[in-house]
Length: 108
View 1 (cartoon, rainbow, N blue to C red):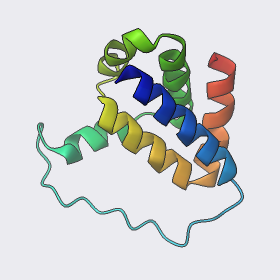
View 2 (cartoon, helix red, strand yellow):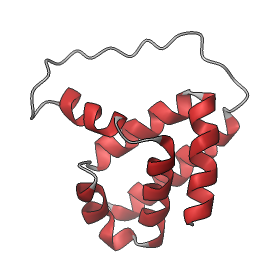
View 3 (tube, rainbow, N blue to C red):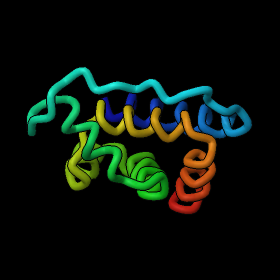
View 4 (cartoon, rainbow, N blue to C red):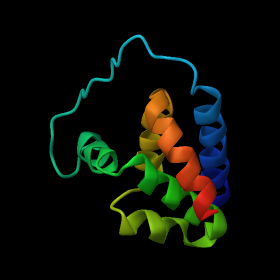
C-alpha cells in the first residue's frame, strides 16, 4: 500500500509538471456529501487546508520514508485517499502545481 502511495504521488507530480501550461476551463468539483466529521467531504476539507508547498513536502517525506506513510499522513489529518485527492486538486491548477513541484524537489 505504501509503495502504491509513493507511485501515485510520483505520478501526480509528473502530471502536475506536464499540465502546468494547460488552463482549466472551470472548476466543477462539487461536494455531494453533507459536512460531518466522518464524511468524505470533511476529509477533503482538511486536505484542502494544506498549501501546495506543504503537500509537496509531505509527498517528498513519504517518498523518503514509505514505511511511515500512514503516520506522516495521519500527522496532517489525512489518509491515502484524501492525500491523493489533494494532489489531484493541486495538479488541476497550474499556479498550485508550480508551487508544489519546487517544494517536492527541495524536500527530496
